[in-house]
Length: 425
Image (cartoon, rainbow, N blue to C red; front, side, top):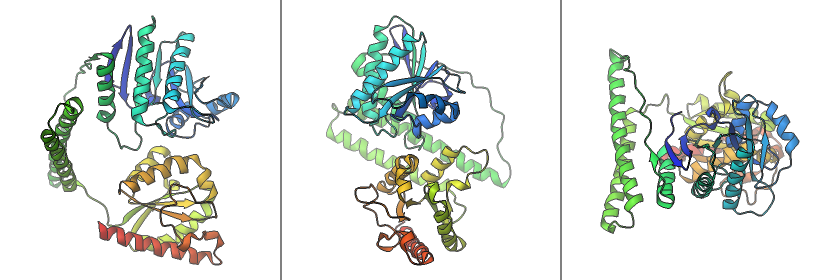
């Protein structure tokens, strides 16, 4: 993959890439893990899928690990020679910045001790560990520049930046790193290598489809121009914000708001939906499979009426990449149902990945999140406790004398919530 930015630091290179770390050809891949090395979410889960389940047998010999440590294992089916597991979640009192600094420095020390020359990092701790991208960027850049300037070896260090939920674009990452590096270390970014582009064979559709294709092409060109203007204005604010007059800042912010409005308007001209039904994503623990199926039978009433279209992970087809399919549906759904039980809360994927993303979209008013209480569990202090739950009075489904009545109550509650949602839209 083409590198977004490459800096020369002494005799070594420090590169920033917007992409999947498992595609790297580096000697070492760094994973951000918990002290039990479960490799259950984010970057670690992606590395495990690519390396194969045999990697779990090797990491089992290394547990428990301590917060801030880096554990070395083989790389399974990956091309890399080793996986460095940076422990960012675990027991112990350690500041976020210290975790990132210690893990990054230790990884470079181990790389040199093993006489290897290339390493690929993720944004350490910025996933499930919850450390902010800004804090991770500052800590990693500070350590890596210091280490690379001091080492006589020629090392190749790459930081892979990848948001599997699609909330951030390359410019959101790269610009911060570039500004930080130039402002604090005086590094110069090398110009990207120009690659030859072969002339494309025309595949323009003819007949009735040509107009639709042309409209999409015009919309894409408009969106591209708007995005370029947005980047110029944001870069100007980042570089000269302190020197700009308040009037100029207001004008720039006003234009940025106009650009967003124009982008939404342009997208609406080419967006099409197969039906008026509201997409519903169901997040649940597989332990509650039977209850999920029972609920699905009752929700089929709303599906037959064209009110909703439901999706859950059992609908992933053979050969599909399951995590990518879940992410896509989770990002697109207008309503997200959380089937709450003790097993849901215990599940790191349900609780730390799906629920966290669902509540982010709820807070940004991009989706409506509805907890459905399947089995009794302590709700106080949970992130979703502020939300109105179903069935009524948050009475767990399994405690109802007639479970069908509980599911009917949930179905009616979902119908009313969707009517309110569509009405507000």
